[in-house]
Length: 93
Image 1 (cartoon, rainbow, N blue to C red):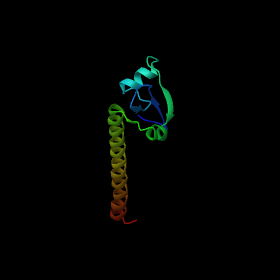
Image 2: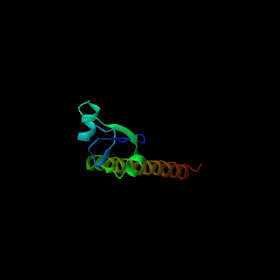
Image 3: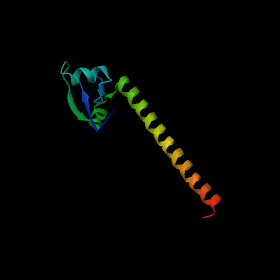
Image 4: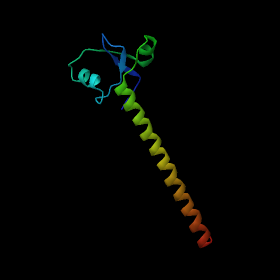
């Protein structure tokens, strides 16, 4: 999962990469098999680089998971509140 605002860029690349070992390029960089420099994501964009397709896919999946978790949390909180209100009504408190 992408964390922070720094990314990897390689010498010959047109793309920038998140620090995520699910991306083949980032994995090679993290293992020391490929050289890259770290820059801020904003800088990479200003240089005309775009996010690699592997990192973009992982980022999109992570965002969907987070949205799913938030939706589930809201549902369960709502159910808990409804239960308390129901039992309060039944008991007559």
